[in-house]
Each structure stands twice: as C-alpha cells, then as structure tokens.
Length: 110
Length: 119
Image (cartoon, rainbow over the protein chains, first blue to last red):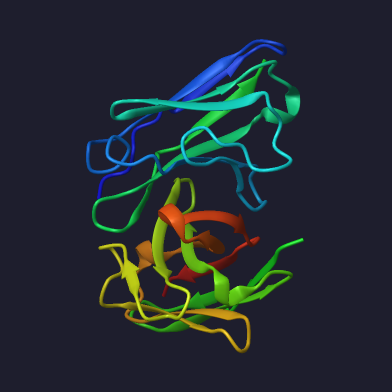
C-alpha cells in the first residue's frame, strides 16, 4: 500500500489561509469518506483534527476544515496562527481493510 | 481524559524480539478497536496493525505481516505488540492509538515508545 501523496511543505503568514492536499486512489481516498487529518508537533502525540472528510472533533478550532473531491482530500487552515506550525498527515481507510497515511506536510508560519 | 501509555521499547539486535505494551484508561477499552502506528526517524507516520474489540480480527501492514502480532487483554485494559525477527528498518517510535470502529480511525494517541534495532 503506497502512502498518500502530500506536499512536503506549505507556508503562510499569520492570518492567511493555507490548503494541504492529499492524493490517493479509488481504493482509499476516492472510495471511502473515511479521510482523517492529524496535527503532529514533534515529540508529542499526534492529534486528530478532522475525520470523516470534514468533521471536527470536539475542541478543535473551526479554523480547520476538510473536503474531498474524487481521489484528493484537502485540509484548509484559515486565520493561520503561530501555534499551527506543525507536521500534518492525512489518512484513509482502504479497500484492504487497512489504514494508509499521507507522506506528511510541514506547515511553517512565516 | 483518554490516557494511553506505551512501554517496552528499547535497543534490540537485528533478528531479536521485543514486546510492546499499551496501558489504557479513562474510557471503556473493550468498546474500541486499537491500533499501532510507527514513525521511523526523519520519516512520516506508518500504520502497523489494528485489532477489533474482541480481538477476533487483526490486520497488518505488509511490512510487518508474519513478524508482528497484535493482541489485547480487555480485562487488563491493555494492548500488546509482539515483534519478532526485527530489522533495522523497524527502528521507530511506536504509538498505540484508540481507534474508532467506523472507518478504523485512530482518535487518541499515546506519547510513543522508541524501538531501536541495531547491532
């Protein structure tokens, strides 16, 4: 199972919006609405930010939103803040009853 | 607040074995799937394995199938990962994660335990 494809890095200034893409296939992202997004600060536990493509868990800021079109999912962070600087990973359920993660995107707040 | 605490990591020689444990608390352990996910140095997250609520079904990444075994003890609120025939490429921080039944979605993660495979 190949990793989902994400851009290696995305950057933006405070207050701006950024979007991270996550491209898979019809056997994972395109086939199921079970796409999730995680925020990972190095040395800490990854945190679930979005699940089921566009659902925010309780306590997650509404500045984070998710969407999907075909085999590509996206995470948008609006009103970028310094604390958003972290690594972000998408994941998807697959047709083999497994889970696959994206390659990861480093978000830098300029 | 969901608590997941991994233990059992350490330094092991290639070909050796190691058993990781994950102690869960503050939620009904038997109601959730559980997963192991790892992150090798300088790389991204890699799903390793998951187990259903009763332990009757398990699945593994191709990279560990046949070498790793996931198990759970619902009476002890504990998850395990038996790792055999370890290779240098198994070196990683291993995270245990509570996993939603729908979509096999890891929603809460532990802090991880480091496994180093080196001679």
